[in-house]
Amino acid sequence: MIVSSTEKAGAAFIPEVAYSWRPFANPEMIYKNVEEKGQSFVFIIDPWTQRWIIAQEPVIAFLRSCDGCTRLSEIIRTLSNDQTLPFTKGGFAALAEELANNGLIFANKVEHQRNGQEVYNSCEPVGLHLEITNACNMTCSHCYVASGKKLPFEMSFNEVLKVIDALPPFSGKRIALSGGEPVVRKDCAEILEYCVINRGHDVDLYTNGKRFPPGLVKRILELNQRRLGQIRIQVSLEGASAATNDLVRGEGSFEATLKTLLMFKELGISRSVVLFVCITRHNVHEIDLLINLAESFDIAMLVFSQWQKQGNASDTPWASLAPSTEEWVAIGEKLLKYNNPRLQVFGNFYGDLNNNACGRLSLDGPLFPKHLYYYNAFPRITPEGMIFADQLWVDPSWILGNARKNSLDDVFDSPKFFDQLSQMRSRSEGIASCRACEWRRLCESGSPGHTYAEYGHMNERDLFCESRIYWFNRFVQHQTLKALAS
Image 1: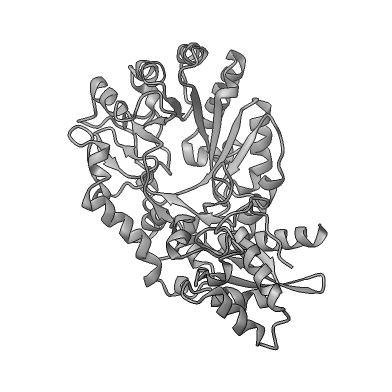
Image 2: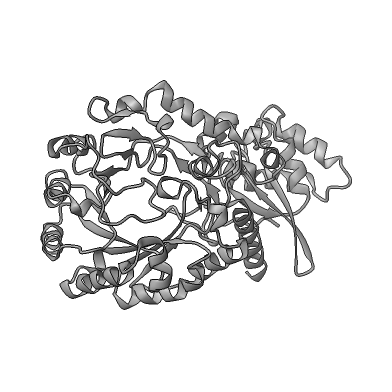
């Protein structure tokens, strides 16, 4: 028995030449013995391609024989003489065809490489995280950039526009305008207009929601009606009550944010609003209340994230605030079941695993979950023009250049960038617990940015390891039970 949810893929099986074929299978294949409903199976995963099958024991022997050097006819002859394998000669030929069609064996190693990707990758940027000021009307205790006061050499209006010009116009890119509090910058509206009207980009405007100008809301509504680029407003909140939120954001901030959310609803922009919450042990019990709050203001999207030890929180490690693994995965299970067409709810409860077209985790996704990280997908530009490859890297040693004099193409083709990427790709080699882990090639020690913020280096696995292992096993269980029920 072979069960796979993947579409036909991999090497084409051609009967006339099949026996002279030298099939190749990943030597780092993962084999999970599974017992369900009194039956024994092997859940087989190629961590490179994320292809998987549910099969029985003899399939392992066949896959381990596919070294890319041995002819199929010889593999079949050898295995057919093994009395412990209940396959006929014709059975092994049919097995080869099925494995090829399901993307588990390939014509050669090169073809296998073309059908997968590493955990850590580079790419053409899909957007920018652009901080237009460090000034802020709040001093949140978890702010990752320690915003508050305007910096002495912040970029001018024209310099900000030059950074925006680094992205090809009308190309489907997304710009996050952040700070500090971007709304306190007097030319914020003009920057927004340039992004969406002149350059055709979508924009996420990050705000703490404190005294958000009604006039800016009306301006955003006008810009969105022109349908060249669309603006969303991302509002940060830290709980469903003043007691939890104000602990982080300051006294009176919860009521101020609710007042702004009500204004958004009344002015008709709530369907372009994202509510963003960092989950800690202090507010983890308010998940349902936060969902209810988002629904009550008819908000389009609710995003849950986690605290990171940097900026104002540089002395507050995530480990001191993190919910338990049991709480973390329970919320993940809850969100997988949540279904409201008016509210999209996302959360970083899956250890950055994804396996569907939206870059999210799905238990019914066609591919096995994997941590896929595109290091420079969303580069960060600071108010003074410093370029980081990723939003949550703030250590000065990771600066790649300055937007005032360096282009994105230049910095992402520099030796320093490739050295950073190489450090990520090799980090799990030096972590004993990762080297011994069967799931290593699907996550490679997890988030390097979060690990660096927590420890000051990347030579540790990240702090979401246990929840990630839960979801690997959960996918195996879900798909096995689904196969048995079909």
